[in-house]
Amino acid sequence: MPKYSRQREAIREFLAARYDHPTAETVYRNLREEFPNISLGTVYRNLTLLTELGEIRKLSTGAGPDRFDGNTSPHYHFICNGCGCVLDLGVGGLDHINILAGQNFEGVVEGHLTYFYGKCPSCTKNKKPIDKPFSVV
Amino acid sequence: MPKYSRQREAIREFLAARYDHPTAETVYRNLREEFPNISLGTVYRNLTLLTELGEIRKLSTGAGPDRFDGNTSPHYHFICNGCGCVLDLGVGGLDHINILAGQNFEGVVEGHLTYFYGKCPSCTKNKKPIDKPFSVV
DNA sequence: ATCTATATCAGGAACAGTTCCTGTTATTAT
DNA sequence: ATAATAACAGGAACTGTTCCTGATATAGAT
Image (cartoon, rainbow over all chains, first blue to last red; front, side, top):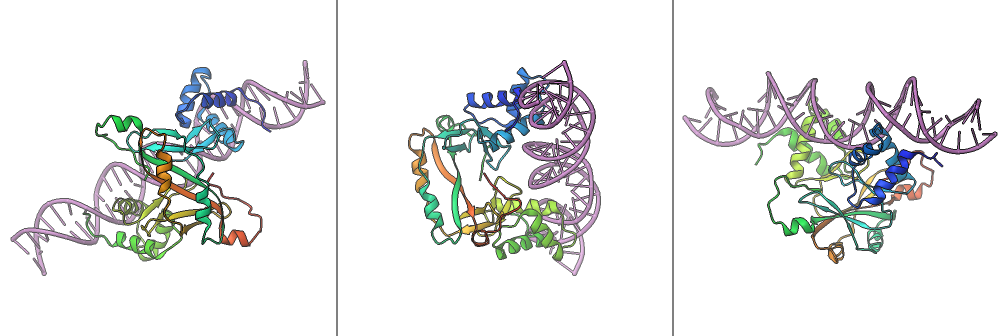
C-alpha cells in the first residue's frame, strides 16, 4: 500500500471532477496552480500508480497521448473523428462479444477493449468542414 | 498514385506472407537481408503510405510499438496477456454494437475498434507462470 | 536510348510522450 | 522527536516515430 501524498490525492480529485478524460499534460498544467513545483514525472508516476490500484482508468486511443478517466465503472468511450474529443457512452452489456470471439478459438478470451468512433454531437450539428480532421483509424 | 519502389513492394510482400503482425522494427530487420542499406525511416514512410492506400492495416495496441497486418479483409485481433502475441480471430459481424452504442447518443457512431485479450492457445496449454506478463489493460 | 522532372531513398537529426535517475522532502512508525 | 523510507522535483534518458537533406531511382517525353 503506498504512502499518502498530497500530490497523488490532488490528481485523484482532479480526475474525479472532470468528465473530459484529460491527458497527463492537462493534469500537470492544472495541478501547477495548486502545486507550482509539481513535476511532470510525478504526474506520470501517480497516474500509473492510480491505474494499477484501479482507482482511475487509462485510455490509449492510438492517436496522440494517453488519456485518463476518473470514472472506473464499466463503460465505453466514443472518439470524435472531427474534433478528437472523447465522450462516455451509456451503452452497456457488450460482454456477449467475448463469447462470439471465443468460438473457433483455442485460447481463452478474457475481455475486450473497444472504442467507438464517428462524429460527436457538436460536430454533427456544426457541419463546418474541419481543417485538420482527427482519426483513430 | 505513388511511384513504384522496390523497397515498398518488398515491404508489401513481406507483410502479405506473415501472419504474426510484425512491428516496423521487425520489418526493418528482415528487409535488411535484401536491402542492406534500407533505413528505418523508409520502412516507416512506406508502412504509413501503404496504410493510407488501404493495402495494409496498422494495429495500435496501446502497449509497445504499432504492428502491421498485410490482411486487409475485415477481421478482429486477439492480444495475449501472457506472451504479447497478436492473433487473427475468425469472429465476424459485430457491427450491431455500433447500433447499440448509438442509442441514447446524440452524435453519429460510424464504427468501432476492438481488441480481444486473454490467453493464447500456446499460453493456455503451457501453464508455466510467465515472468514478465504482458498486458494491454 | 537519352534526357528531364520528380518521387523515393539513406542517413541522421529532431520530436513527442513517457520512464528513469539523483539528491531532497514529506510521511509514517517508533 | 527521531529514524526509516516512500514520494518528491528536476532533469536526463529512453522509445517509437516523423521530418529534413542531399543523393538515387523511376516514369514520361523525346
